[in-house]
Length: 613
Image 1: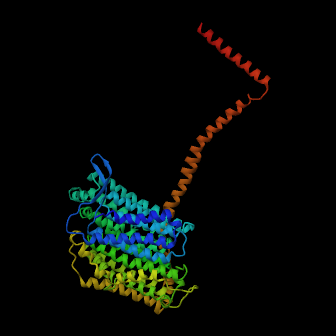
Image 2 (image 1 turned 90 degrees about the vertical axis):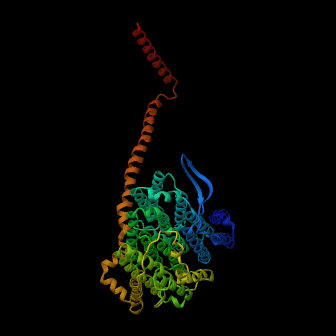
Image 3 (image 1 turned 45 degrees about the vertical axis):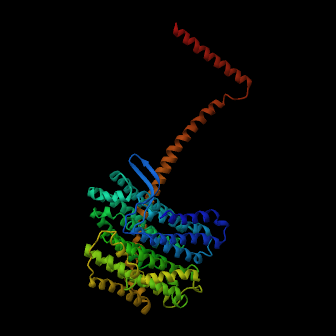
């Protein structure tokens, strides 16, 4: 099957543009970057077209990476039904966002560098989903984290961008530490990292072992997929260019944690405690992030917190045992959330960099195509039937009701808030009177064509791509009876959210400010994101920084290390100062010292001789 070609093509694009891109014209950079990703997508289609998913296919082995005693870890790739879904999402959505980037980044510096980093990200993401063992997966996992850091801080001459990149890198290291501990624990208890061996032996291992592994994997997933309490890096990641937000921080990399947990389902189904932890973390994150999204005014920040919330839904699906529903939402979310971010990028492009929705309004008349396509994404994420988000959202909520009814009701309230804040953003941006200072203009076709394609997928993708049916034989069967009443309730929650947003921001525009003023303390807390960043700064960052300065710098470095080095130097200098007195340059003085020295030596010799007698 030559699976290695799928990631190798984007890697070649990275190398070519990274080494020679500075000398290339923009058209040549585009040809290399986009051509490599489109060819990778084409090779995925070719591979999957002739693939028999009902047969057992051994991994493609390329070389043995680690051989130590009985432990053998190879560089191996494999394809199954889950991998197929992820490959199509990564290469398909990735190709559209690469094309969109031509228009969005046309006037930015570091053009070749941006596309080189995007290609490198595609390489690592494809390695992650093709991996047939945990170590190769971990390589892709760390690689996409590196690319996230590079692209968040793409505008490295701006402090807020470099701070955001550092924040993402550091927070993810916490999660990755948990993942690495899980890998070590798997080696200790299974003697292998191959998925086939580990998953095949999982049923025979003690529950506490599997629960420990499952919880450690969850720590890694919380970091990469921005779940409580490690979600804080994702909203700040919006400092990067908008195509990065769409590709990495909405459609692909942040779903890696969901994919990893779903891939590890043979471990989780024998560790119910760990599975329940996934569901609880997911529903808590979904609700918490949705409340913050209600009060944000930066259009990208609204969709950032929406991403955190929707990732929480995916975790609920996986944690409730509805693995296919979680992956289903992963796919539909890639459609409508990539569209929302790219659409917001089109708005920002039209307003020459403006991101504050309070300085927008009335844009539906000026950038019609952007408005129409974003509206398709809005109705999809709101869970309105028959659009894509409805199918995957309700599959998760029904599974949540079967698992624990309170999760369903909390998820339904979250769905209502999601509809409200997304349409709040739509109404503030596209309705009413224009409140800005620029002269809005529609984006070029190279940006609009990907928006139109994603709009169509947002509308009909859930109906066309029946992921639960495709994955039905891959994941363990979970009987969740369809309940029309529950589906009506969750849909009604979305419609109520839309109606409330229309009432507060279109019908009675001043009502939102009036309501915020009546509950000022609550609004202040939500607007400031519950001061979580300030709490982390006070409880962790400042103590670490101050402790480093007082203990490590002033105490250890300046006090102990420098003290020893400087002390030795000072003593040597003092001795030298004494000895220097002997170097006067006067011959009489030297003769006197020689005479005194001779007397001392003779006296010592005589004394020793007398003692011997």
